Amino acid sequence: MAQLKSTRIFGTIKSFALTQSTSVDTGALVVSGGVGIKKNLNVGGSATIVGAVSGTSFNNLKIISPENSATLKILDSKTLTINNTITLSATNDSKTLNIGNGGTLKSGAFTEATANVSINLSATHNATTVVVNSSNGDNATINGATATTAGVVTTGAQTFAGEKTFTGIVTESSGNDIVDLVDIEDDVEIEYGKAYFRDRDNKVKITNSKNSQSLGIASDTYGIKVGRKTDKKQLPIAIGGWVLAHVDNIYKAGTPLVASKNGILSKSSLFIKVFFPERVIAIFDRVEKEEKWNNITVNKRCWVKIK
Image (cartoon, rainbow, N blue to C red; front, side, top):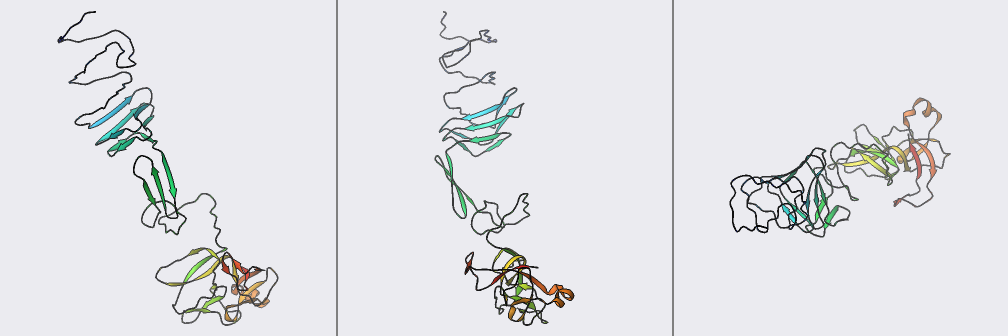
């Protein structure tokens, strides 16, 4: 084997040996020292770099695979800092950034690829936030959504904005009816389970005579409410479902009821059912035997179905 201390070659060097390189000591060409290259370096196979890859500037780092997937891997507990752009390209659209356990990807832009991050993530929850915990880095707190900001759905009270479309069944389990919130004067006393009407001065009051026209029954058993205003006192009037109401007697299930004196419901006459059916505001259903319903005081009220 010939040994040369120093040589200069001004032409092209080609080696036709096909020895595969599996380490720094194997291959068709093995260089014990460093290699200085002033122009481009093209590698047809895989490139394994044991040490660091550094430079004064990486404007664009591209990893291109014409046949298989293009993959960039950041090993465990290592860091890749991007000041500009990383682009992964592959003809079959399989482009992946793999970050190992404890690895870090810092800033910059990452385009045309999917990032798979594995850094021991876990999540903790409370009524208003979700915290994403990392064993090797800063935790991230995701706040609950509001009327002006995106976020997570929480178990606390929230106000959403924008249209929401649900394609499945929506289940509400806290109430039994739907109410429309009616603006009232500040001096109007709210008595749940009683009927209210609007007088000639447009003021909302408890009904004061039998067969009175009425807005409906004030409900505290609702699960859904509409028409909410934050700057007005409002009366929740049941518009659908079953509500606990004050009734003057125990009637047979299916008996039509009308508003009566002091907001109490009473059995409708045949005359009212035939000639003024709009005054029938509810149908008697059953007696509530418990003193509490969903933590609401029953106060000797009965269940009626809103008509």
